[in-house]
Length: 525
Image 1 (tube, rainbow, N blue to C red):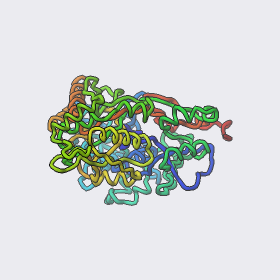
Image 2 (image 1 turned 90 degrees about the vertical axis):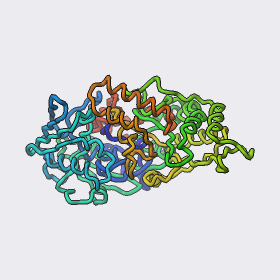
Image 3 (image 1 turned 180 degrees about the horizontal axis):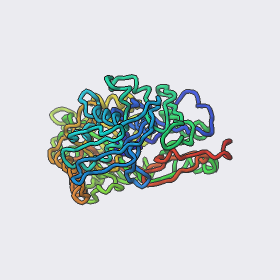
Image 4 (image 1 turned 45 degrees about the vertical axis):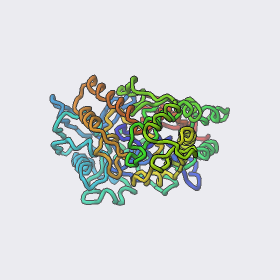
């Protein structure tokens, strides 16, 4: 998937559902998901399910290869000026949109124009606002010139390109295109049944050659236990296993004979995020006390069964931006109680619940249905907080309703996850300007030094300088705890063995899905 796209998600284990099982076809991959897509338009999509589907329907100008190097996609090559401010993309000729109209540089320019249009609800605009000029040099040459050096510039053009001839003059936020997308990618949309399935079919005219797997079906199955039963019965070919399924339930002879499991570190993390508009969470000492109250080791050992490690900040250990010296909050309930007392929270009426000015310390933890690990983590956090005098309620919501609550900023706290891009630019998540509806700083975090550092990290190409900048950002966020950073899970997908050509790499396993195949001798299974 395009790694600039911050999949909310949510570190979602990519799974899918419908009422009736899809027709069994050996050359169809059925992948399961806990939640449906929202909008199949890459420049406004802000959820993981939409990102998964968009990556099969659309192409960017560039993409990452298996070794996490940027290579050409719709652009066959590019040049960068000596001052680093101008990129000239030389686009592939003969590429067709799914409706057989030719792709040209005008589509790239149109995509840029929509990404910077204030009327378009895109969370990605900040990556394109520093462009001084974007121009069509010729039908297949597109040039962008930046006001200043911009280190994530090339990666930002992994954004899916959208068709001008279908969307010019349209409202991208509401247009029917978002349900019936037309891209240049390896798969075309065939059918979308809301909350049940999304069916894609191979694009016979794809510029890199027709994908070997005929169909991709994304089934929505909100419960991981049901999903695993579907795997056993042949209704699902691929899913992300939860820790119990990975370590125990999948260790049967039947599973081992028919499926292959994978495990690798994910470039993301799970967190408890606080709505900083809520007066409960405005006090730094309170947020730090909550982090001392939370027993992360119990969550890692008891919930994800050791398949992961503690998280201290916004970068996982697989990132070069990770700061190993960042503050770590070991479980210390006595220290948490002292800090809460210092912040004015005392049990004045001896009812076991802290209060301040007559107001009890009570809030709700919101998380999504279908992710048992998050629910169980919430339960451990609930017990941990009760032990220090805080009443935390848990509310579990269906995925789409959960995202709507986030969009409306209607939550006290949430348990969620980020899947990060390969470039450590975190402007869209942490900059104080990115708090509008549909944007990623939905907790309302604001810190002037972090704002300056986020901008500085974009202004240099020097890795050493950027590393110092992001180490400092990591240290500040670890100190301020706008999130209680919980853990970095390992990815644990499982795929039916009839699919060949899977090559695990630093980018995971799905990066080369176009090359997966089902040999003729595996037609029956």
